[in-house]
Image 1 (cartoon, rainbow, N blue to C red):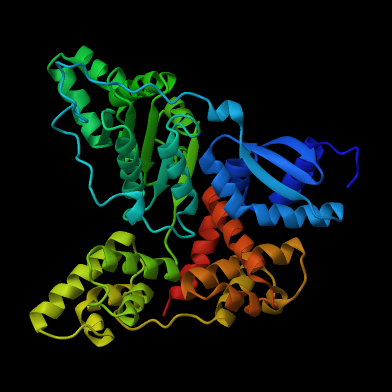
Image 2 (image 1 turned 180 degrees about the vertical axis):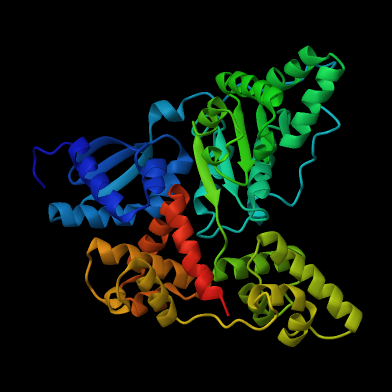
Length: 462
């Protein structure tokens, strides 16, 4: 390696190349916060803000960085992550401890929801669709208000947003039993504002929310849309807690900028920390979720693996519905006094399976082939199916090829290797990059998302 290169020079070059292989969110969340500390005898030491970031980078990115370094500098460069000393010594946030004459309560009012004891990190199944949100939640639980504040998690109903939010609360309370963790839904906050105004107790309301809370967790903040008075109170509550170093965690069914009824100042605050989405789980993830559910309820010997996979292949709407299928199947088997088999599962879950695999008319709708996906996408993007399967990397072909890969994964549940083979023998890393790229653009570009959805709609038609 050139002797005139500094640790900063080497790290900048590694970051530049890493951005070509990793999603932007991954680089910004995990690699950019790492700071070059030293470069000695081909050992690059990088400082991380905490132990969680150290372990995550070490397990997920060390090999990639080592490979990039060897390519860039023509020799082996070891990369080692260490917690920065000044970060390691930083004090934890001050916790509110009730006075002797006050109850050690975790909740403030009758409207607030209790925590579900099953919603912990140990019972949360991590997959590609929720990996970033899960990592951010772990980081927040490890060092509240130090890395991501607020943490904003969004996604469709039943995918695990509430589970992750409550897991943070459980983890924090395990380490700090006297901490005042406030978990509630946005509707409860709205009702509390209305009741406090009606009873002329707004000073008490503001004291409860702004001076007696260590961690503030609010579910379904999209319900704040259009509620001007509530948004005013929520804005000041948010600011007070944030400035006091209290962790805030929010969930919604969409990202902040997609809530037209939300004041711009709240949108800005919500986007000021980490915004992480949870998507639909793929086949492998759905199967893992069902296995975890079976293990939790001690049913692993009762429900065969082939039955779990059958359910995962045919029920795709949400994690909540997947878990509900287990309960329904067990009840059905008990009533019929029959052994649990694929045939019994098909009978017990016929309504859910039909909704997933039949057209509106009730007739079975066969899944399209990869050839059909390539044909539809090629026509809609003005290219040829042969071009999608070719080695050419022109922009006119790259975008529709990535879309076709995304649809093949989303609609056909093909393995990464199978998709790569169907598109000119590309490797799995190229396929992963394509799937991530389309997912990101769909979230940012409504026109692009609609175009992809129209292609999927055509492919779903009988």
